[in-house]
Each structure stands twice: as structure tokens, then as C-alpha cells.
Image (cartoon, rainbow, N blue to C red; front, top):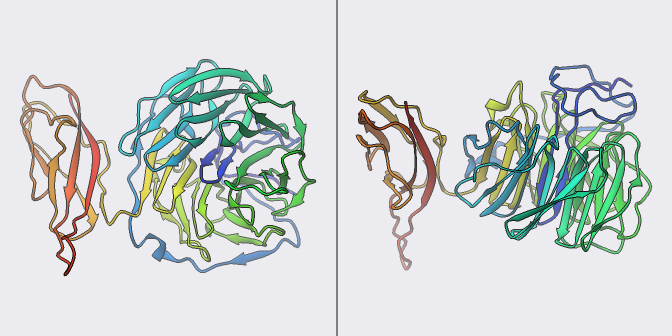
Length: 461
């Protein structure tokens, strides 16, 4: 068997509803199966498939993107070394974590991301974060430590396995979490205390998922580099079960004990029905493209992200065709995680420091957050755009959200920002724009109107 890769680094994913995490993996895996920390090689390499492994294909349904869609990538953490995990318990609260030297976290409030907060100096960065609620999160780092967030205050470090990178963490509450590492050990967190290591698979463990409603035999699941799955029943771990031949499994999401989806290093997914695993299905037909993150808030909706910046949606029976949602991440960077608290909202991050969101809003602003730079006393023009709803659109600045540079105005009919910045105006200006569509009258009901907002910035230099 030839174990080769395309993509690299840490692939981490958390979602809530169920709590799940996909762990980072590096392309130059050692002969023991334990991945070294962050390797820069990102090349297309050969892959051998286990003889006899089941292969299935599905039709790719583009209708999954018929309404709403992904926002353009927004640079929210450009100088920290990348984002490797995101966890959203609601559509108005997410936490992203990452960093290459220090461990950084930042929060999303439903409209904007905070600046990265360095809470873990010299650790090598966070690999995974899990937030079962908006008042509690757990993050694990490359030094084997864990940090907890209680209502916005981070504390740590707790030495879970000092000196060994923790790949993933998943929490169902503030009193229970599961973590794993690249050496194949699992750890449980109960009421403030971490357990000692439980060896499961020497080839290394990756993704973890814990359904919101556990059963007596299924509390959490872990998938491993060799394609195996392990189930924790609250007391002990099951023996390894072959889930995907010898294909390394990167991502995992279990909204219920009777339904799990796992993504592998070849762009395939396998599903678990409560007792058995299905033969793998090709999600990314380009091949050899790891599915680094998957998140399923229900059994009829999943979102997955891959190394080339593609996104995929699952509707309960089929996966959508590849859809480029983050071209900036390819070919030298990769999408690292996705989290969907509901079928109407997801957040995703990449290792270039970008974040993007998925929404099924009828009306959606499609212009990227960072607008073209302007020069003082020089004509400037850029036009905001939107999709969906009922044209024509009306644009306006949200009061109290910031101002345009002096000399620039927003045309409420066209969405064009134009004018000449004043000679003395330099720096970055941040403001929020709202778009409204035409009101639609429905007999017997109040008129309906759709709205969307987005934060923008213009730098004058």
C-alpha cells in the first residue's frame, strides 16, 4: 500500500448540535503513521486503493445551491499562520482557532469577526476548538494542552498530554469532552478533569463526533488514519471497525447515533447507519483531494469542504457537484474546517486566515468584505452587488456602524461607492451596508421584504 497525499497541515472541524471535530493531518506521514507537525509539501501524489474496497458514485445535484450560498472569503486572520478549526453553536456565535507559533482564537457575532486573540504563546497553535454552547468552548493545541472558555474568558493551559500534539476535541457540554492525538490516544474530560491516555490506534487518530443525544452504547465516535472507527459508550472504547478500507479518514459528523458521515483523503465519504458502514461514495470526482471538514446538523443536510477550496452540500440522498467557494486557498493553502449549527447557516475557515459563511437567505450581498484601496484626491469607484430577492435593490449605510471616507458616497439605487477621498484622509475605514429588495404584497398578509447586511472596509493610502 502506497500512502501518499495531496494537501497538508492541520485539518480541523467542529460543529455543535452534534459536536464533531476533524483533525489536521500532514502529507509526509511517518512510517508509524504519526504525522509530523505542519509540513509545507502540497503536491499531487499517487494513491493505491485497498483491493476489494467498495466503490460507488452518485449523481451530483447542483440544485443544492439553488438558494443562498457561500459568501466570498474574508481575510480575518492573515498574520497568525492560518485558521484550523471553527465551531458554531448558533448562527450568531462562532469561535475560530489556529496559529502557527502562538495559539489564537476569535469570535463571530453573526456579522463580523473579532481580531485574533493570542491566548497560548509558544504552543505551535491551536489544532481544534469545540463550543457546545455560546458560554463554553474547549480548544486544544500542538503542545498537548487544553484551554477552556467560560462566557468569553479563556483559561489554561491544562496539560492533557504534554509534548504531544492534540489533533481534535469535541464537547457535548461544559462537563464532557473527548480529545485525541496523532499517536493514537484518546482522552476524556469529565467535570473539569482530563483522563489519562487510552491507546486506540498507533497509526494516529483524527476526527471526533459526539451526537447531541447519546445512547447507552454510543456517546462519541473517533475515526483514524487507517480508515477505522471507534465508539465510546461512556465507559470504554469499542474495538476498531473498518469504516473505509485503508483510506485515511479526516472528518466526521454524527448528528444522531444512527447517522454519521466521514470524509477521507481521496475526496470520498462513507456513512454509518447505526450498525454498519456503507461503501464509499465519490464526493469530489477530481480525486486525491482530502475532505478536510464535514458538518451535519441533521440527517438530511451536510456541508463539506476540501483541500482545493471546493464546497459540497448533501441533501439526504446525494451530494452536490464541486463548487469553488474559496479559490484563494488553492493550490498552496487549504480549507481546514466547517461548522453548521443549522441547515440555514455554516461557517468555514482556511489555513490562509480566511473565513466564509453559508446562508440560505433569499437576499444576499455577494461582494467581498475588503473593497479596493483608494488614493487621496483620486477618483474612486466600486460597486456592491447582491443576489436573490426581488429587484430593484436599495442600498444604505447602517447608522452607527461606521462612516465612509470623506469624499465618497454610496448610491442607494446602484450600490456604487464613488468620489474622491480628501487629501487628509488616510487609513482604513470600516462600515456596514444594508441592502433591501422590493416589497412584495401578498393578499391577506403584510408586505414582505428581504434584507441583508455586510461589513466592508476601504483603505486609503
